[in-house]
Image (cartoon, rainbow, N blue to C red):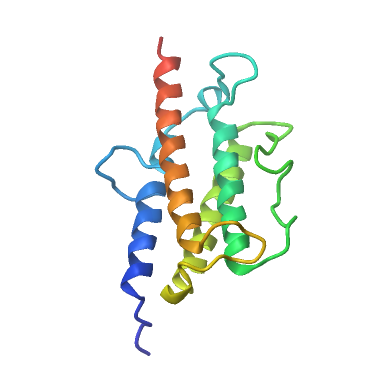
Length: 163
């Protein structure tokens, strides 16, 4: 069976999302790459009280991928497996096994988002999804920018830990 041809605009958005999250990029580390090789203490380190650590940022990224996906497919709120929304709490026992589980959650949310984008018609890009204030295109560009922003934040946190 021949593979379905993806519209060039949709393919470009998929490339943008992948580059920001897990593909080689000219700007340096993508988000997933910024997490590579981190130990649990480095994931949990905070530069100051009331600041976020790398693990919390990873969960935040997973949540917002879910939020955009939910808007893309018009799914009901409340199906993200962690809470509270936006900045989900760390597991009660933040060990290596819990990190692997949360990393899997992050990768799965990205995969769901990519699948939703691949199923999107280019004619919908400038339309606004239900219960949303901006277009599909703006949402997708925004979530890619969100990944790149937080990849830089993680890189900075890693450098601050070395001082």
